[in-house]
Image 1 (cartoon, rainbow, N blue to C red):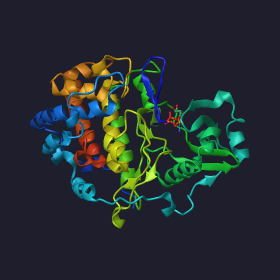
Image 2: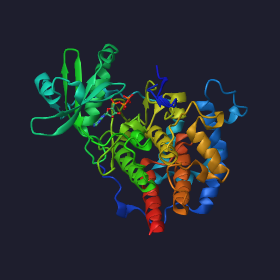
Image 3: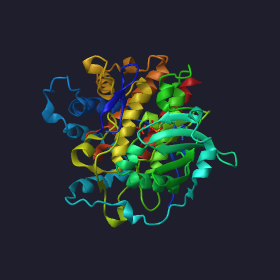
Length: 417
Ligand SMILES: Nc1ncnc2c1ncn2[C@@H]1O[C@H](COP(=O)(O)OP(=O)(O)OP(=O)(O)O)[C@@H](O)[C@H]1O
């Protein structure tokens, strides 16, 4: 069900196989950037973590790894770096020792979403009867149109394809609506409302005008995204996901963080989209620490521990975020099937170069190989490595990721002047 489709370049386009404010800049300690000794420690640990990628992403034609026994054992060596995981990780050890996991269904959220219900007449008007000229994209959910509401607001109108509805879309549609309508954050795509009528399932969300992060990494408009902008985007995404994870009553796990779900504004700031797979995380107060659920997500970004155990926590998003960080600095997709064998799994290839002390060789060739870029690259890779740790207890929180990135950006800017 979750395979991958190929784009024209032969690369795999992955397929789906109390308000807590974003951390404020002032709350970030200025000395929390990773030290160089810390980096070398992480580099050592990386060697064992690299095994994870072998196990999880070995392309079909690749030989079986010789060291498969260590495939999920990387965290033992890696545990020496657990001090960077953030204070709130301390509960994770307990989480892993629980033997009974409770399924938390969406039914606990019986409250009507505060979203506006649209009529078919509104939608037809906004999209000029689904004019093909206004079609801006196509995804797993269906077709996306640009539209304009009566008050002039520009919106993206996502129309579910009939086949999705046939496949019991009902629950997923409700999930998307519930999650979207309750959250509001500068770096999250805002939900304006929905329509549910007969076979039609339509979501109306904020229109974000400047394409996806993936498109920008491929220079779709001819402009190279600078490392500075990439850092800004990473911080925006970290803030958005931190917000979801610390959401008032019920934390939300995004479940599908990837570059094509990150939309950019004209000023190149990021807005995280597509809560189609979002599920409400287990309520910490009730003692239910994660959701056991059918595995969903996108190939290349999927947390191996989630794949193995079906147990979903916020740390699955952290894993996907780590893959996204690697994507940001290399410009490559998580899986590039047409590459040489040792380069097909981008994160594994990048981590190997990092541990070999030649991280600079994986910098997106569109970026200048300057000292400042090289240093920032190493620090970003170090964080990415922590995010993709085999075991979730060794991964930092999203809040911690935001803090570290904030400091990397600060140091980077200081180096540039
Ligand atoms: N809010 C939006 N504003 C502007 N364009 C959008 C918006 N949402 C989606 N799009 C465009 O529509 C495309 C398809 O989006 P959609 O979220 O349906 O699928 P996807 O995330 O690309 O893929 P999948 O559904 O498989 O995860 C996007 O790549 C983007 O170009």
